[in-house]
Image (cartoon, rainbow, N blue to C red; front, side, top):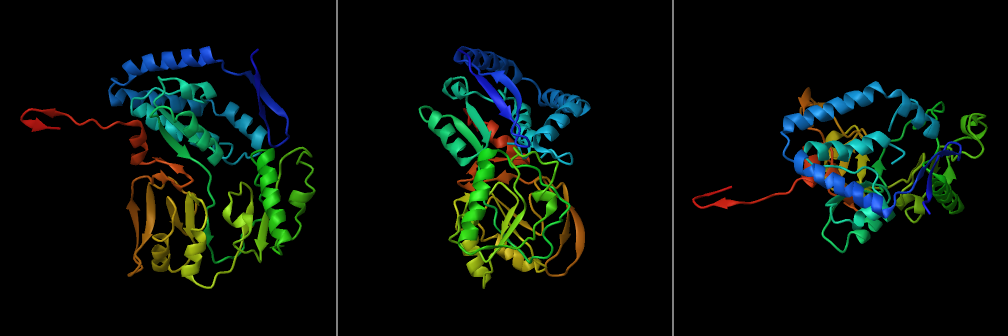
Length: 352
């Protein structure tokens, strides 16, 4: 009997849509057709592949109203598409480099896909648990994996006014995410942490929030210590724990004391000191006075000695991961690397 898969809206906890689960024969046929298409697509000139991708992006842009309504229905964010957090960006991070590199792609793979020999690479943005399951499922053969997993994202701040009380971040990703965030807050409060935010009716008594929705009110925790779960775990909600640290040396040690290495940031007016700190942080992406900005094509540069301000064109940043936050990378010129294989060859008299 074919099972039904349900998509649940975290905003209302209602079923948004249902679809049939992919059977093993269906998955095998999809992989077989995709592998056959690869034999032709890989030999297509790059310019032609680029033209196809460009047309697909234009087609998607012309029809953005429908997915826009679907996204805002689920997560209540009319201002940004940005797993549930960045549903389209996460897709194109791997999809477009793979297509431009000449790969054929199966989106939203089923569990059976990992066992099919035609699959040579698996890309996933998800939880650490999901990443481990991917690696376990592919352990019997040498399948490459490109994983972006969880993060803790520590930051060194000079705190001012961190929260605009008119901002609504939308619901949490899921029931499990809501429970996890709330349990971290409760654990910290039980250990003498203090919620520094006053009750805000925008969140506590908002008639637009369905009772079944998975909402978490913004929380700033003070008087925390590094033994609390919220300081080391991934917190998928609007929670900011603040801990006073006496020195940069201890700060770096604590910021590195977790199992994640996705991002880190330093917020300071002393750019030279901030740059020194960034070199010591164990994270794939590090920022000064900004956060979560993956694709700057041009930036304002302030010289750390002369204070001279200039505009500089740079390549897109690679979105990299350290420790348990994943493997390989996306975005920027490096985004093509996971989908390419090196081949060395030699012709007598010359080498390539």
